[in-house]
Each structure stands twice: as C-alpha cells, then as structure tokens.
Image 1 (tube, rainbow, N blue to C red):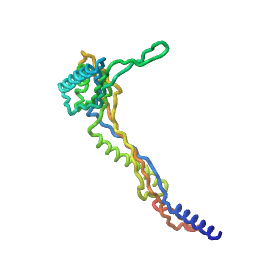
Image 2: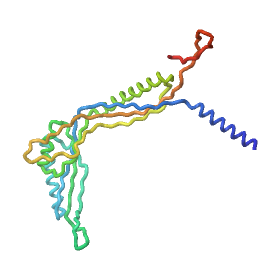
Image 3: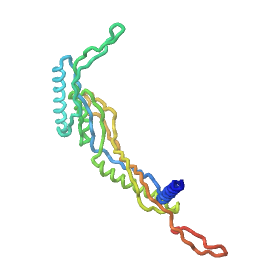
Image 4: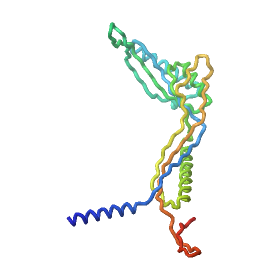
Length: 252
C-alpha cells in the first residue's frame, strides 16, 4: 500500500512539474487585403442540341460548335484559350400523366458541349460574348475575372498580415510586461479575388457588344500566429525612506 501511495505521489509531482515547465504563450491574428485590376476573364458557355434521332442531335451540335470555334478565331481567341469542360450525350424523358398516374416518356436525345474560354484582352470581352451567341451558343454561363498578378498580390498580403500580427504583439508585450521569445506556430488562410457575374447577359443578334466591367479584385490573407512569451526580469532598486527596496520590472 505504501509503495502504491509513493508511486502516485511521484507521478503527481512529475505531472505538476511538467505543467509548471510549460512556457506561457500568446496567439494573435493578422489580416491584410490588397486589390488589383483584373486583366483576364473566363467565360463558361455551352451548345445544347436535341433531336429524336441520336445522330441528328450529335451532328447539329458539331455544326454549331464548329461555327463557334470559327467565330472565336475571328475575334482573336485561339484554340489554346478554349477548353472543353464537359461533354454529354443523353436520352431525355418527360413525365406524362395517364389517368391517375405519371410515366416517363422518351423525349429525344440531348447533346451538350460545355467550353471555358480565356480572354486575355478585356477590351474585346463584350465583342467575344456577342459573337458566341450569334454563332450558336445556347447557354451563356458565368463570367469571372482574375489577375495574372495573383501570386504577387497574395505575397504582398502575407507581408502586410505578418506586419499586422507583429504590431499587435508588440502592443500587448509592451503593455503587459512580458517579452516575445519565439514564434511557435503559424497558419494562414487565403482568399484569391475573383469577381463573378452569376450569368452573362445573352446578346441579341443585332447588338454590337455586351457591356461588361471587371471591377476590382481583392486578395485577402489571414494568419494565426502563436508566440512563446516570458515575463520581464525583475530587479531591485533602492528607494529613499524607511521602506525596504522595492522590486520593479526592467525595461520600463
């Protein structure tokens, strides 16, 4: 029994010592946001055809897509700037009521060819969208904007976020009578700016160009930083009068 109590006491003392030896810490968040003018646009679009005959549906889609590619080439969009994002060929059905019940009835074959276009010259963006619709695009999807300086902008945001965290840490340490020893952990959360138009306006056959503006892009960075901290050293200074020396913190 005595041995068990001795072991328990030793374990408790060791645990308390470990807890006492753990350094004090402080965690703060630094944030920063930088902006950039967009210099690239991405257009999502699709050509959808439907026919009771499978071959006819496929041929109609191919004819329209060929016209779209030719038209895009005519306005300065090369093949390397066009990417097929999805292609589907499906049987379609519609629900028909017969008496008190419903049943699915064959409704033809549908072919969908989805493409994503990269426009590096924003001055022709509206012209490109108009030309696509006139050439046979049946579904204009999202138009989003980006920046070729995204990586540099995020690095700039990182620097500013770190400066923000250090500024806060300095304020706390100078007013809390402790010093920063070292950074023990750092994590980041980033947000790449991309302004998105939920759906592009379909251009009419006689319109000159769809009016589109990219606005401004924001690139945000949030960092979470943890420091090991320790109190400032104490030192004794003599004071006048009968009172004994008083202790004050150095660095004040």
